[in-house]
Amino acid sequence: MSLLERLNTDMKQAMKNKEKDRLTTIRMVKASLQNEAIKFGKQELSEEEELTVLSREVKQRKDSLQEFEKAGRQDLVEKIQTELKHVEVYMPQQLSEEEVTAIVKEAIAETGAASKADMGRVMAVLMPKVKGKADGSLVNKLVQQHLS
Image (cartoon, rainbow, N blue to C red; front, side, top):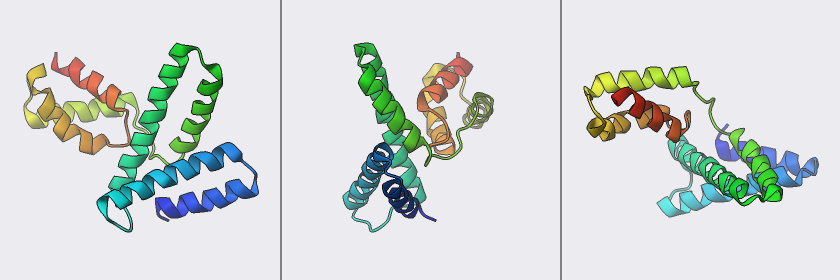
């Protein structure tokens, strides 16, 4: 079942169950996917493109969450946390820090990186492997640790 089909099924279920927050979030994600398809002039996105859109949605919500927490807007924090929970359901299983560390070490060995100056090369090899499965800031932090 494609992501769009899954979203449609879940959207119908949310309507039946009168889950307003979940329905709103699913509609936003679905709209983002459709906008991306229009942008690329396609009928359907590939799984990788769908994953990119989902990752962007999660990142936007995490960024918003931090900003709202700094501003002390607890009402918006709760709303964003709920949205984030609903969006993360569609993301692939996240890698543990140990798994990411192993992949980082492998990428460093593969590129022959020796210092932080080689970080770009390592990230270019690494990011396609962990796309959507690990938080970019965690990956960045681990690469910096292993290159210093």
